[in-house]
Image 1 (tube, rainbow, N blue to C red):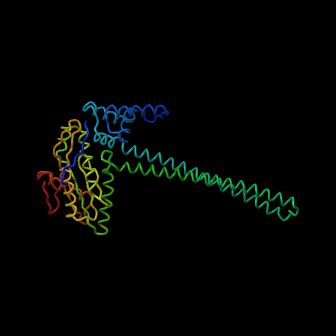
Image 2: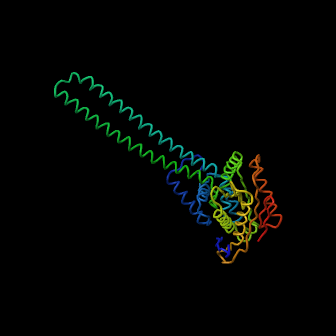
Image 3: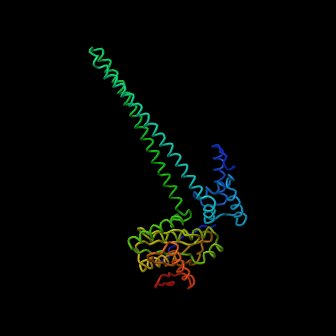
Length: 361
């Protein structure tokens, strides 16, 4: 980048008891009041945290939040993320999926009932036809034939109406099941995303890395893993506050996301550490890409909103590991981690990989 890009960063019930709709609305209102009072980011995880807090449905969460409020007077997106991961994430995702599962069961039961009724109606229609077939040889008069025809028309109309009702019901169930599928996919997607940055989380990273290692092992394709750590991030938080720190994390995630492509993946590995999976990429190409990201982030001029003053240069260090057959996920991550710490030890703001080094430009 020839010119420094400028980005502004911000300043600062009892368990098991079924609640009435009014209780739920009241608690929801209280949760939104807490979001506003403490100026916490309006993410779904933020609402989930404050709802659990005001409903007192999770004693450990309540205790943790109160300790944080007493200590700092506010909660950053990072702290909310950590509390949710510790006290809410798994149970909430599981509860949401269980709820959708119950709705699936309801819809499938309704479809089964409609089909059973259709079978019963068809059997009744068949009985009418059998009766007509029995009577037909004896029906030699015009009146008898007219009676049979009237009976056939009545039954035919009844079957047509019932078939239409069945079709309508099945179409409605199809729409509802499709909606449930979308909701389930959204729940799954949210459980694999970092709520602060919007990129993949540690769970998604672990699953993807395992898949890529398996693929590289099978077809002998190249694979690189980069770990990144924002330099002196604690100093940023201590100097400007966690909210500014959160914005720095989001800016970094955006820069990486804008530079990777195809099957590449960036994930928030934890705190200020990120992981970048680069399938079918040799170590030299990975190095060039990661160093481009390093330079772009170092040149980004971050502005503190309250004072309109720059935060100064914020940099990031990287370590890259190249996959070798037989290496498991734990060892692969450790290899990248060792390179990352080498970059830190040698002065930060650089990329370290096997046989390749790039210090600050």
